[in-house]
Length: 336
Image 1 (spheres, rainbow, N blue to C red):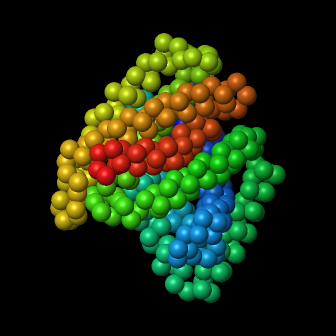
Image 2 (image 1 turned 90 degrees about the vertical axis):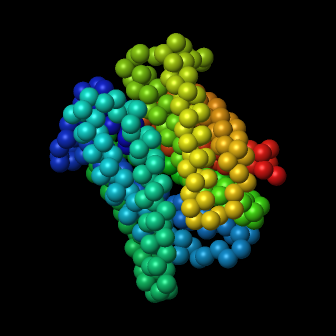
Image 3 (image 1 turned 180 degrees about the vertical axis):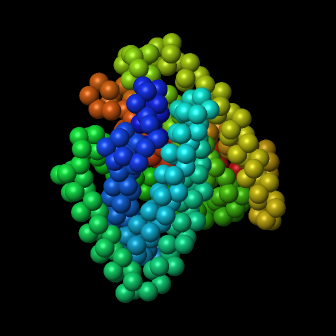
């Protein structure tokens, strides 16, 4: 949604309004439907993967759906309001929304989603409530998608047709990222400070990739860059900016995680190993973000799809998976 709003700001079609037939209104409706749909589908996939990979202590599919829908809607509502507020502030202040949207929305999403999921776990304390919520969630997801595709406007239907598949595929990649970290959980517990580094590490990689994707898709829509196989001058400048941002951002993430571990007395491998993990893993993850952001945008554009619907979900979910492996690899290099 943020990427689409960024493009609409650059093309002059964005207006702050409550009309559902406006660009903003159609994007808000699409975000709402996608949130409900994704929460249910990803919960079912999480349950299936947990069973398939033999994850110990896995909860029931009804529990997964209840936690996912309650936590997802709580966090989505907050992030939705923040995204619109950022878009309006960018218009009034003359900011480039593509530069501020991905880092702030990604960071706020991580900060809001984890507490929201934790709050949602209290709902599953009652089996009766859990089953009712799960049934209502599944029914609501089906009704929302069918209603939007049947009676929604062309813009809403177009967003959903392209984004639904990408959101599910992206969520599946993120689920595999969770399994990868789950498999290394015991080794990471040796130095819990490394666990404190995981959220800012993945958030930073996703933010850098999201910003790059948003800038590239806007330039494609405006005709500033062409859908060439190899990056042109305009695209190379954005790619260079991604690497320039990566070094200080990942270095800061390691410092903050190490200080946080020190404050709450968590064992740490030390400041230098933490810095090495963050920089090596971060640069590997940034390289993957560059690959996915550029060629993902080019491929979707050439296929006649809207890169705004494809780019950020594809980048962030790919970074969740590859970033997790990059992080684990860096831990092996500098810690174990």
